[in-house]
Length: 225
Image (cartoon, rainbow, N blue to C red):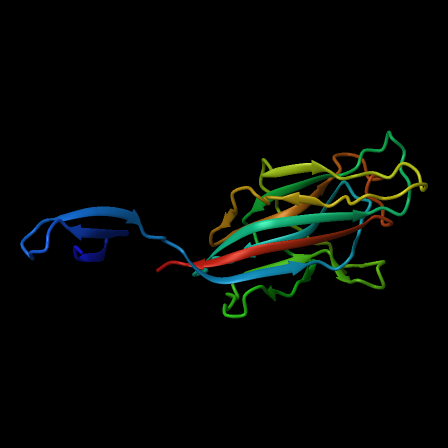
């Protein structure tokens, strides 16, 4: 069988088979790119139950990769779920759930803990997470003492209308809104973040305190070789 060898050269992996049995025979080479990112951590976080703030805008979740960070944070999936306890008129628009990039470090809100998906990894402290609630409070939610404030960049990366309940009769189907699942991940480089923004334009009655929001986020941290 011909000899086989491989050598990494300038960001590519060079594989080859010798054309014959002699050391003087030439090589047939094939080149594959070398992955330029190495997974260092896979994480997930979930917010507390978050009451609506009856405001024209509310940020309910944010993930941020700090300036000077040595990792890239790649957002794999975000899910947003709404529990409505009060019926709304058909003329009352629900919030637009929007995914926005941002760069300026958020203020207010409540820091969220990280759950490790692979215990062999270690998260980087530069990746931080926030919500706009500080406790589940038996499902009622407790709004953060200070509103989560994020300077969102436009345009949004994705958006969907939140569901509405028109009457209190009947059965509530699953109304989870997934973002980025099955799509390209959103990469957060140093001093970049991503937030979940409930945008009501000029209407405040579409997101009352009786509305309860929960957000889950999966992300992966990469280091460069």
